[in-house]
Length: 114
Length: 112
Image 1: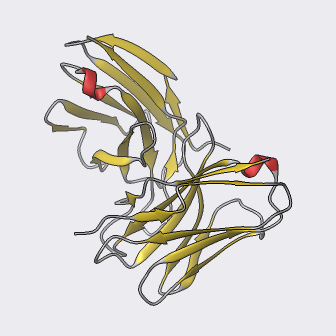
Image 2 (image 1 turned 90 degrees about the horizontal axis):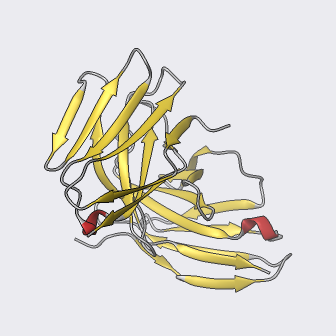
């Protein structure tokens, strides 16, 4: 069984640039959620994708957007990067209907905005 | 607005001791309370979870205690080992919802 994989693991961008982060869900999982984890904080929910549609969204501006593909993999796109976007971005996959919160996280993409 | 409040921020315990982490919530719709363990450079991993129909759940050295009336739950790590040194997050979710709300985390250091 393949776990959740994310790429890239680390990246550095400058303010105003755009970034795309990628996630492959765990085998058998059809739902992908994205979380932002600032240094020393707990993960904060960004949005969730199910059946290639956004299924719910947290308190993040529209410059945070995403996609889910037919193979259940997903992308997180952030436009007009700000310094506060520096964080660990976590992808989590789950099987819709299994039960709230049974999330399986990847190791994350560490984004630094200069 | 943080929906789950976690304490302490950090703790140090001797090998063989007990680590206790506490969490409190306000949203009475929450009905799923997991704990995640995160090692440096890794993503969080589910450790143990509880639903409100039980007051305690034990898995090996890890126990969750749940107090529905007080809207509090806690994680007890018995016989703490150096390999337990990690950051622990409590979280809460509601049936039919699509997200977990996480606490701010507790960094546990187990001294040999």
